Image (cartoon, rainbow, N blue to C red):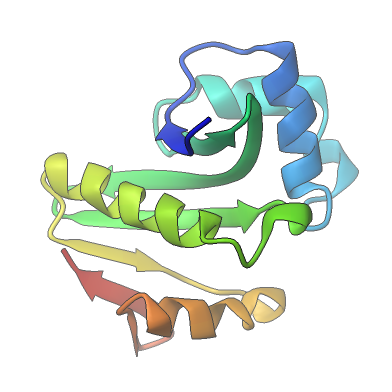
Length: 137
């Protein structure tokens, strides 16, 4: 099966299970409850996007588009599937989605534990500007 990226339209039990695995190492338990994840899936802004392979969700991110700027947050690839191109594919697809919705710039902010992610962003064409990582679309 091929890797795909999409915005889930409804809550499914497998999605909840997989989101708990994706975010287990980065979110506290109170954000991994079914109720918290249901709310995350159903909200319109920021929108949750997931990458799926072999009927399992293996990466996720939130994308919020305001005017011509897309803000990316909570970008995470499940530990077991890192270093296989999933993050690159997810980020590339999110950039295309943002551009199609009128964004001309995409940006993200990294907290202290996300600093290793900066090397990935540089490889993907992002530049640090005043503490934010930005890329023109």
